[in-house]
Amino acid sequence: MNFLALMITLLLRQLRGASDWVQRDEWFRRWETRLATWQLGSVGHLTMVVLPPLVLAQLLLNAVQTRLGGTLLWILLAVIMLLYALGRGDFQQRMARYRSQCRAADFEGAYLDTLSDRGVTGASDKPQVQDEVHALVQRAMFYEGYQRWFPALFYFVLLGPVGALAYRLLQLCRDDVAAELAGRCIVLADWAPVRLLAATFSVAGDFVGSRNTLFDRLGNLAVAPAQLLYEVGTAALDTSRSGATVGQSFSEYAARQNEDAGKLLARSAICWVAVIALVVLLD
Image (cartoon, rainbow, N blue to C red; front, side, top):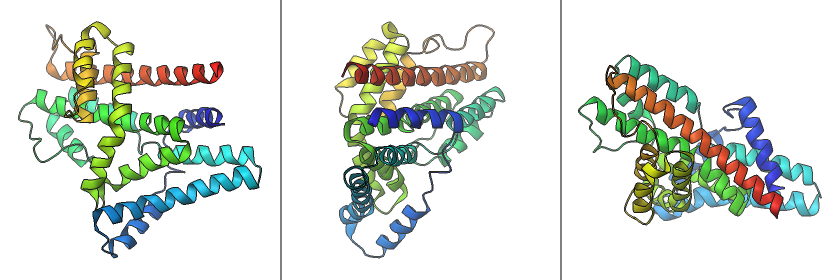
């Protein structure tokens, strides 16, 4: 049932694009605001924000499966939960906007857009030149492209719909009063899926050019998830080492590399859908 729910979700996502019709976070924000007045501390607050919705979701799934006997209804609920667990907004539109900014040499605008994205940059990120801005945006794009779908699918396959929902609720808590604790939890939750996707970048891209970076970073516990994806993903791109070629401006090079990064993410997604399908068929 998990595989069928997964396939239906991916098909709906492909046909409908962004899942704004499912991804309504108002209820969660109201719950966060109410709990903030209880002064529970970071651990208590994060636990109370995330745990009750997960318990209710699991109880609902169990009731549908065991008491109501509704396999189709269970699949429908699983699809809704997985759609909700996927990333927000139109990622392809965001990347296209950045490429337009590159071609217009508007790297200041690109930097400001990147700053406006939740959890992308920190106070220490102060790029001074175009290539620094490009590296910052590419790092943000790689992580955004990852967190939109891969960890949700990873925990959906591993733990079921509630696992995918748990990851998304943690991401939603990054602007909450327990944001620092939520960020540490996300780093732990990202550890395995980030490395799996980084390995997929090497397989789906330039393996020879990226294998040393991949093997060096896989066991490095100190490297941030976004930085790991950026370094391995960039090394796996054909454009990663060539720089701006003769007669090509840096703006054109940055736009082309961003486009190649999008293609690498797409190929990696196809690889994992194929892997999941193969595992189900062989089981």
